[in-house]
Length: 366
Image (cartoon, rainbow, N blue to C red; front, side, top):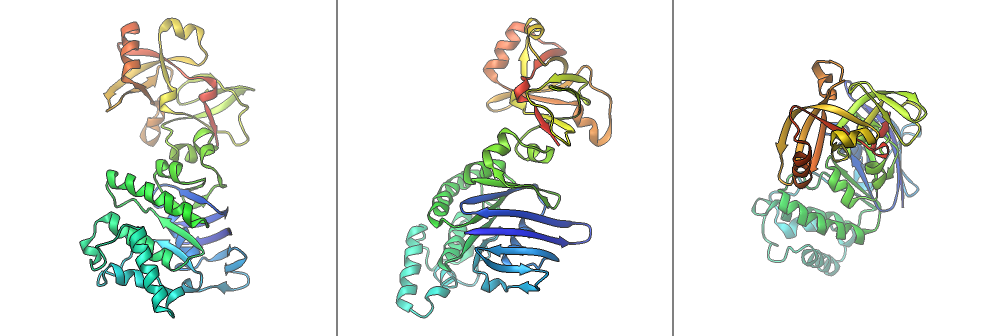
């Protein structure tokens, strides 16, 4: 079942321009708050009408601005799980589930059996007469998802399904949801600003930044070789510097004042480098003489985290800047407590230390 989306919606100060294709499995839409993720789902569901473009699911056109097609939401048969779950507060669990029973509404026996099956499957036994206010966040989510599945949707769309849940409950429900999505089998769009959820749940991902979508790529590619600074940032990279080409396999990190060797030729549109915190390594002065991409930094702060040590650094050759760009001068290094203790035993760093980055760990970004 293939989904094709190519739409534009102008809200004045914000313009949504989304284009992607999905063909089965779970596709993630990853982006910061306010980037247009939820609005994209609402356009697909028919709740919001785009200004122009085309939306099509498995050969059925939902929206086409040129042909003036705009199918009503109730006729699209797509399931959208809202962030607040959108349960009817005056109805109990069983009544809420009954609202999703359109395929069975003419056969009461089948309708009752379908509801009972969902109550069993989603661990809602004993809660049939409870109203939403009497349920936990996890229970509300299961009711909302069961109601959607009872309607036999052609595809599922989940809008930040774990955002209102605490960490422990979120993990348990994520495991349950993964199983549900595997059983569903059709197209699923999973919207989140949480990169870890996207990595664990989705097969492919589309990154959104300020209303614009990027090409759909395998999830692992986003984390192993992102192409843009926005994608690298959303995948968890903390260290960035503006950069320019200084040779076939050399780049100059302008904000750090460091010439670096990389493993690949910089792509067209290259403007940034990115280095993940755990790829910045502490080295002794002797080791620095033998390694590529070793440079000296001032130690700004050492922070003990739960399982690691975070060291904030500033390369000694970093250029002076102020305002919003000042953070680019800084480098975040994260090492295990054991590695940091061993290094301090060797080098005994004071105000400065040497660090090193392997050429293959430098991301060349647009």
